[in-house]
View 1 (cartoon, rainbow, N blue to C red):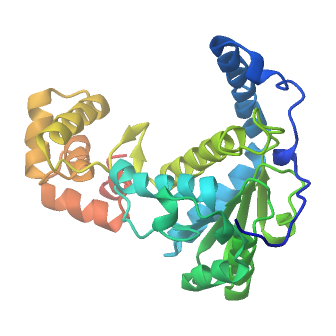
View 2: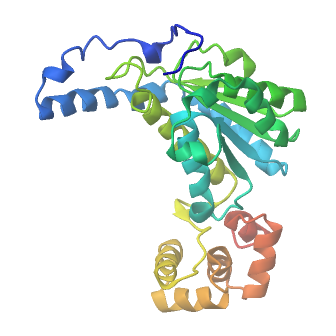
View 3: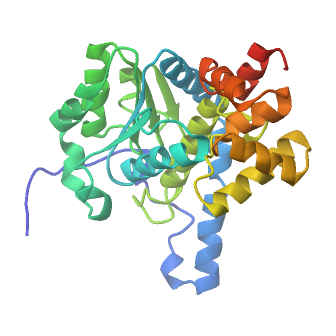
Length: 304
């Protein structure tokens, strides 16, 4: 048994939900209905903070466009969700794996095994944020809006000159003043009091999905609503990419497969070849000069 300081937390995510007092007396179906009803409130809560989220996206685009990076900082559920989001961007959009980086309090060991005390380590947040550069963006994620690990990271970011975003499930978060933008999603009390892996976690997932996807779209890592950063490194992916090329160009599968082979599996290069009617060398140079954006590459060639 361990002992230590006791802190009484007064934040919305720790409130008791007045609508679920009898959840342990209900049938399985009724339990699920109550959980589902509470979950249904989360998208509306995210809708309410879209203006703030848009400002966060613009900061992310500015960081990446200027050669900087985006860094996520979180503990517990927030840190795990951030780690998943960062890990999924390279295979989805073809962005280099070091452009969006997740820092989870306690490192990889804490991903699978809860280390709750780590979130109270303000100095650890500062140390993890020491990798930031002036042109980077630091995104702190904390359901309560008060986690010391995140506070340390945001404060260190300001000292370095990096821009900052706070994502919380508390519109009146204590750390709101530490960030350039606060995306405070009002998810309210959880079905099970204090279980922020539920509505607060869902809100964080929605915000991260929207944030990173919007940043990638604004950076030109899609063409229309198609993933063109996928590189065809195996048979399954080659089939997927050929389908993408067919959707984007309206050309037959055979022509798209031939262009993909000529582009050495690079979806962007193949797409520019097909849309601009140029060879792979010209398409490769245009895509490189355009920073990976197909539309910008087409404009450079004069085919947009």
